[in-house]
Length: 110
Length: 113
Image 1: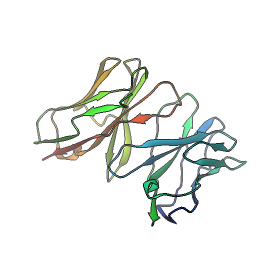
Image 2 (image 1 turned 30 degrees about the horizontal axis):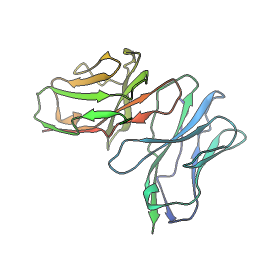
Image 3 (image 1 turned 180 degrees about the vertical axis):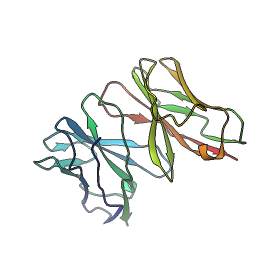
């Protein structure tokens, strides 16, 4: 399984964009990059996933480096409800085993 | 849909007792997962099922843990006998197909005294 490196914590001001980085230099060519987040006292929640090109959905955008060794989750306008631990998870095509690392704890400052 | 349902939400028991955690996946989801979260080890996958059949149980810590899925709408995770180190939050998740987003339940917080 590909290893990931994320900063332990980040802070953002409310209503400002947030860029959450993830390094996954050992990712294989068929691994999708999934992002989940876990709000306090809740189960993890899917955010977004992609393979090669950048992806957008209602929650966030995912920018994937051309060499796929890193990716960045972008929250366009952070709200207090976005305060959570964000996990970057490479996942093999056809696989189901999500391996959660330590993630990045995002604090949003009002 | 109500989402993934877990019960109980909180369980406090004494060492040596049997504990049964329950999960109802989202209707139509063919995959069901059991995870455990502790401060020391983070979130770990314990076991997952596809169409009620256990596919990968390599994460189950030891023989004291067992999981069943008698039908598509119900699964149990049993710990017998329980030990204080089993104290954790146990999450159940489901997904309709491989490599798809997983939907997590609210978790069961287990405390073994």
